[in-house]
Amino acid sequence: MDKLKRVYIKTFGCQMNERDSEIIYSLMIRKGYVPAQSYEDADIIIFNTCAVRKHAEDRVWGKLSELKRLKVKESSKCPANKAGLAQDMPDRDIIIGLAGCMGKAYGKDVFKRLEHVDFVCGPSNIYDIPALVEKVSSGKRHICSVSKESRPLDREKGLKGSAESLYLYRENNVSSFVNISYGCNNFCSYCIVPYVRGREVSRPRGCVIEEIKYLVDRGIKEVTLLGQNVNSYKSSGRALLGGKNDFVKLLQSVNRISGLERIRFMTSHPKDANLELFKAIAGLDKVCQHLHLPLQSGSDRILKLMNRGYSSKHYQKLVDDMRKIAPECAITTDIIVGFPSETEEDFGHTRDIMDRIGFDGAFIFKYSPRPFAESFKMQDDVSEDAKRRRNQDLLNLQARKMRENIVGFIGNVESVLGLSPAKRPPDSLACAQDYYIKARTMKNYQIVCKADKSLIGKIFDVKITGVQDNTLVGNIV
Image 1 (cartoon, rainbow, N blue to C red):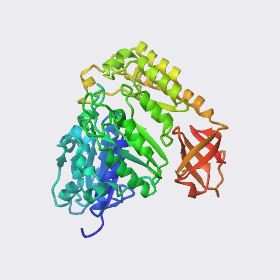
Image 2 (cartoon, rainbow, N blue to C red; image 1 turned 45 degrees about the vertical axis):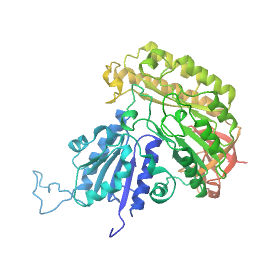
Image 3 (cartoon, rainbow, N blue to C red; image 1 turned 90 degrees about the vertical axis):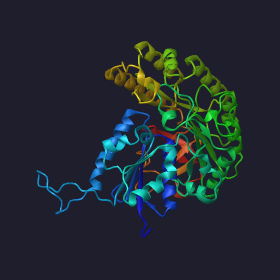
């Protein structure tokens, strides 16, 4: 390569996509590319996309359409249009790719909608991206790589040779994502993940441990273990039906890694969460006091239609057991409103259980039909007005519950991990010449405090003095 070329990746969606973008950056760096700071600064632009919700897709289509301006140039040699402006001509110096779940879902149809996109790649084919870029650079266009049904784990074994290229780039120097599995076997009726990310495959435990040790040696203090359902992790590889899950054993192994300070994980599926997991959260000193446990609906009828595999009573018992075993643990959740045939009574059950539990945080979404998912065959019969009203009702309820929870921290002394410089100081502490950092508690609450930047990456104690915009404010003690 004659000169260093710049690559910019725009990430949409979940933590899985964030980690995939780090892998793509790493693969490109190995080939001699460097990360760019913006679209305008890039020679290669890749959108790593999410297809879980229509809103996320719409954002991608819109942003990609805007990028056409970077692929064209005005020239006096170009024929003029009616406005007297030069017509668009492709500028082959700019390469645009669409990767991730939308790539797998739409394949070659992307080119019909957006002719200026050069290549499409599914989440299981991301290792092909450097080669796809080289093909486009040599003059080929509209290349589609979506054939693989699951992630080839042989590319992620060990840290030598080509596998080491997966670790050249990390977004954060203190906290890092670590994949423990890919894909999903649950087939919740509203969800597209098994169709775009494939069936569940777990990484061998030794590979996960080796990666974390590698990260710790390079300064990482906190890891978040990622899986569509961490509870079904199998250290032997594929999560076969009937096999015993090894996630707690993995947590125990990671907890023994010297130099690692904190362990987080997501997501836990309620049908597989159990007392063994709760005891690990309570008993392993590095495992954070936070459990993300998606409820989705409080109506047993809707849960059955969603193919979730548990009842609202079972979910409530999990929360009760968790709070008995680990009373300090924060619990967060996901909720969908407006699922096909959801009545006001169904919605009322969801509202009641949210009110009763009092989650520390909740992601609340309006249902949208997803191609491939089983619910796509169902009539989307809940009006948009009803979806918006129910969504706003739960957002208001959750805001009140979260406020009640968070103000309870005032006066407490919390152990926090310094993560990064704060973008802006809280109003109660603001002073132009002071330095502020963002930190996180064991319960996953964000906190901003005045501190020396040397505390980034360190564990220290903060006394909570107030709350601003659901962020804790405090002073070092």
